[in-house]
Length: 301
Image (tube, rainbow, N blue to C red; front, side, top):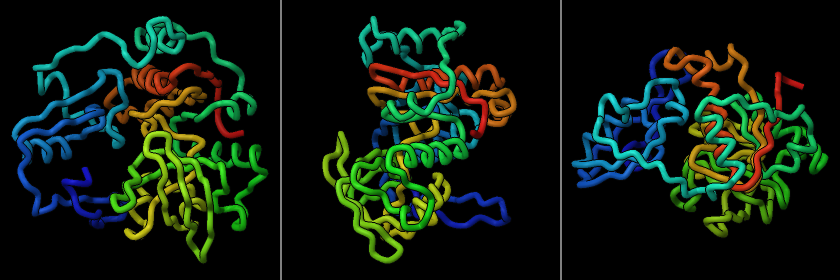
């Protein structure tokens, strides 16, 4: 996406939406490869095909739709020439995570949800939820229990060992949107913090991040308000299911944040609440490599 579009520009009105314009100087591509095809909305799909002669799309029929709730652009109805892959490679065939994900995918009743408890959340590598409100709440909860950290300004900067996530690709420093990192050194200077980072896949990196990113625990739409010379990052203990797509961890805790009103809001009229609940659970559970903890969650605590 960042290869096709320039920086975001403001839109008319007060809806807070950002608008991206196609780069005028962008060479026609003979071939494009698209992963996570379910996340491609109509505009992005049309723009992609207008500048690519051919495209190879990878998608899962049971994935969350584009973040704005619209229907995926690359659908079976519009593009019938799909090849269906059925053999599982991510996990062993006898994996309990695979069995659970398959049960959810095929609509079987799941009866193994645990009561809400902090110990289970602290034991996981990541927590997955549905909403940014819950994400922010649990980032604060985990920080407080692990490090005794609060939201006071003197505690805003990450310390060594903390987890952060990139919210907007930083091409200069090769830190990509959605990538998770461990802080190895943290130096505050004024309203910014310089972080030395280590990533499981990407090795060592350095980023300069506004402290306001951690103060707000920014969501994706707020990442584009961060100055271009800085890196947009925030706490990485809890992610929404949308943000987690395409990533995986050894041990995942899933908050069953699936009340009817919430699912209806996210489905945005495109899916029934029941269908959206199934997709949310499937996506969240399948992020785990070896262990998943299913946690009942009825709202703020």
